Image (cartoon, rainbow, N blue to C red; front, top):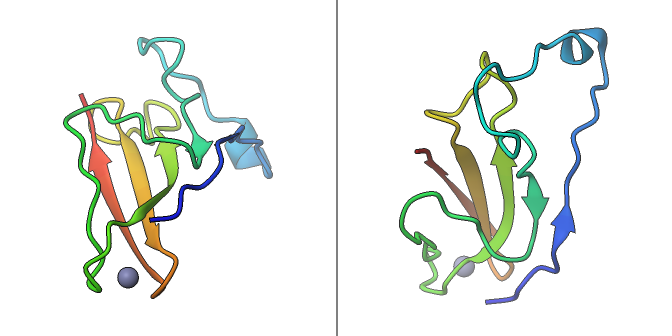
Length: 97
Ligand SMILES: [Zn+2]
């Protein structure tokens, strides 16, 4: 498994619809700011790193946070993306509170 270096991802609205989305009403300040590339997954539930169909443990590639109350993933959840650099195959999982 190859570890991807850690990057902070900061979403930037690219159209007026995205720029006009209201923020979360009640969620904590970190919700919506947890986007990241590489490093280690910030699992909300138990660790859940998938295996590739080739049998190798997949590399953590990114986690994508909920956007706002309209585009919320479960209960303030996140999507975790994994990749096998050898195949290349991807898998994603969603965890929420
Ligand atoms: Zn593989």
